[in-house]
Image (cartoon, rainbow, N blue to C red):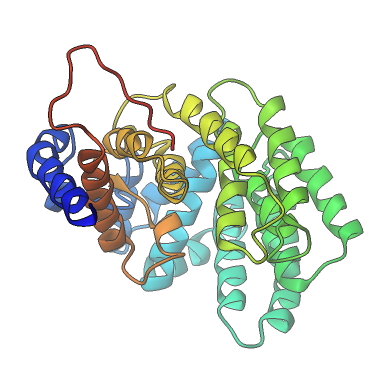
Length: 336
């Protein structure tokens, strides 16, 4: 019987896998962390040592209160500055009190400290830079996301964390970056527990507006649980509900939209771990060419390779579960 099942499984994969590849970009068309149309020119100019487009981009997000885009662009610009910092050094020299330059400076300093063996000591030294960025942008929640990351690295008390969190939500009640940073602090891998982490995520998602990335926060909590220590205290149904909430959010955006790409990549990983192959394949189609470093860099040294390998694996799993002859009108559930 085992041999017969293996033969049937192989036959199903051979028959259905090519068809299930429809709608999936070719491997060489998938890019890791591809910039959107607004970020790409700023990165290109920075590559030529010019800081003005990056400064204009961040200034525009600040003036328009585009906090989600501001945080996304900050992270990408800081990553570029880590590899090539001449353009940012020129920016600091030309405008040392620019609130956007101060924000990039704070993000870079915290990253540098996190990567050092003397992390706690160096992080304490970065506090004035975070304060300067917060004072330069009184309405901006992004410095407070940096402060929450800083607090986690410093081992700040729950009282200190709560004070930072209050400042963050006062500026933007539904900022995804601040919520994700707080979720990490509350995770079992740091200073909380699996239940506390998921409780926080579910409350935040319930309060968030439709289309808000915070609606996917429970899936991020599920991800922390799946990768964290002691995975025995959370019912599987709670993880499935977290995935369902993120699927609902994902459907609010067009396929291939770079804005929810990271959330969709995260959701795809969670669905794979839950063995919901059909749902995972649908998210792979919605992701299109926009693979993101997170979450794949948490589980592999080659995030793009991991994404592509898993995408192929999901397609084969769906093919293997599809009968050789599918009746017209038949539907299948992606949940196992």
